[in-house]
Every structure is written in C-alpha cells, then in structure tokens.
Length: 453
Image (cartoon, rainbow, N blue to C red):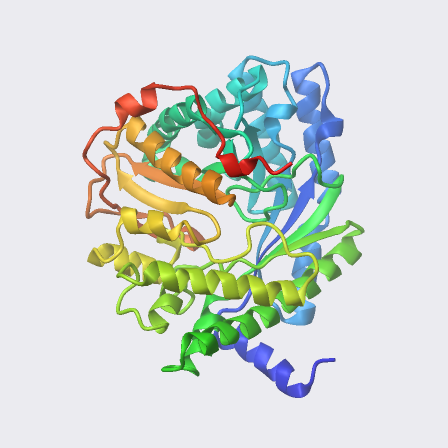
C-alpha cells in the first residue's frame, strides 16, 4: 500500500528528476507468417503486426494520461527477420520485407520496430547471409526499422567471419546514409549474447522462446538516482549502494505497474521489466553525472569503472526485489551521444574509447552510440566488435557495439542526430592496423567455463 509521502515522492521524481517509462515494447512472433512467396510473407507480416499492435500506442497514451507517468517511446520487436525468408538468397527480398516492417510501424504509430536481425554466432544460413548483405540498403530506405546481428555467445564462441563482414556492413551503411551523417548505423547493433526479451532499440527482437505476443517495458531514471545520491554526499559506499537499491526499487515498481496495466488492456501477456538506466541528452538525466556524484571530477577518470560496477550491481539488486520478472538487459547504459555527461566528458578528452571499453565489462551492454572518423577502416571497426564480443563471451554477459563512422567527419567534429539520439562527438581510434588479425577468419572457440553441463 502506497502512503501519501511515497505518492508525493513519485510525483517529484516525474516532474523534477526526469523519471519516465522509456519504452513500452510489444514483442510479436512472426513465425506464422512464413510462406513460399516473398510477397505473401510481406503481406502476412504487415497484416499481423498492424492487427496485433493496432491499439498499442493508444493504450500507452491512455495509461500515460490516466496515471501521469510519461511513456516516451512505443515500439515493436519481431522475430529475427532472417528466419522468415530462410530459403531466399536474394538481399532484395529482405529489403522488401524491411519495407513491409516499416509500413507496419508507420501504420501502428510506433517510433521504431526492431528485429531486422540475424543470429550467426556459430555460422550463417543462406537467409542470414542475404539479410546481412541487405542491411545497408534496408536501413537507408526505411525510417523506423532497426537491425541487429548476434556474432558470438559464451557457449559458441565468436564467429569471426561474421565479425569481419559486419565491419564492412557498417561502413557501407554509413556511406548509404551519409546525407544524415551515417544515421543508418545508429539503427544497427552487433551483439554477443543477445537476449530475446530486450525492449530497447536498436537491438530489440522477439526471440523464438517468446509468446505469440508479449509486453516488455523499459524503465529509466538516471536523474532520480543522481538526486538521491545528492542527499548522501560524503557517505561511504555502503550507503551509496543502499541508496541506489532503494531508488531502483521504486523505479521498477512504477515500470511493473505500467507493464501489467498495458498487458491487461491489450490482452497480451506481460513479459519483463528491463530496469536499465537509459540516459538522454537532457541535462540532469545522465549516467555520467551519477558517477561524478560519487566523487569523480569527470566521467572517464580513474575510478570510473569501479563506480559504474557499483551502480550496475545496486540497480539490479533493487530491481529484482521490486519485480519477479526482471529481464532484458537491466543495469546502466553508457551511450555516448545520448548522455549529456558522456558527451561533455568525451569533448574534454576525459572519456576515451579505451576507457569506454573497460566500462563495458561492468555495464549493461557495450560501446553504444559512438561516433568515429569517417575514414576508419572496416577492419578497425571489426576489431572493435571483436574486443567487445570477447568481453561478453568470457564474462557471460551481453555486450554490443553501435558505432557510427561518420562520413567526412574527423576527430573533434560533432554529429547531430537530434531527439533522444543526441549529439555525437567524433572520438579517435587506435591508428595501428588490425587488418591481418581480422582477415584470419574462422571462429574463436568458446571459453572453458562455458562447459557447464
């Protein structure tokens, strides 16, 4: 039972501390849409999505109005698209499917649809190959389609042939969307240990173990956590951790309320609450500022990784006490262009690509929304992906790379994406070549601790 003090506290979190529901995402299985005809598959996909998610946006907006809880994004995730046209070897067939997904997203009114995806951690089917080859064109001719490719797992190792190819695909995607500073790459994620119930874009897809339809909710609230820590300045780390846990509990409770209400009204099962702290470019809504509130002069200095580890762990502990169905990624995101504090630290040189890589060992995902010079080679991008995949594989956690080689941009320039995607300062990469390493190909074996049976 909520008391009046808790109600007023939640109102303050929403009105003054940027607390919101970052996304209500409906997962939709498209396995029933398969057919021998590409056009029929596209028609089936459009029909099922628009029927299943017809009232998603309306319902979320009604909940937002009735409860006074901001719901920033309404999204859809679908079955990995490579499974739907598995017999096709023609990338153009997959582009047609991407266009059908885009039309469905526009019809339902969601801002993004995820699942233009392939799972190739142990090898590539003909459908996987065709979809991956189609990604640059698909992301350049659609507005709301997001793509992801899983290149490694703890159990399978890392598919280095796929890693090498994704470096080239990212470069080609940037080139095809160069009029928007490579914006297509902001809709493309390369994963290790991708999860099936992630509600956040650009990496969301509806896994084969999910129901026919499901509601997953992603909460946020970096500003709330920072404000809570302001009340315990000078206290030891035990107090810091307890404060974050209690705050995460409250945030997650709000997320579960929205998820269950959306589930009830839509007649769709409730899946999970992802309690990731997802920042925005708004001042005060920053994960970097939380770390600095712990005593760091600037995010990226020595001690940043330890501070992030504490934050991530405390968020998870508080969240799992608030809901029995925590899932997705859950922790703290560090997308550079989407976090005002990260942007500032990167521009000042306090936050480097190498430090971000170290931070990904303990955060929710990985190198996220990072702009690099447009002349960065495909092999260097592949090597960055390989490093992140190795961190995920060895540590049995999800890692990812969402990197934008901004065409025509150099170190010190900025890229303006607008909205939640923010401003990306162009960061330097190591000048030494990784080409010979990437060209070896094959598969990096799984670590010994993957053998748990």
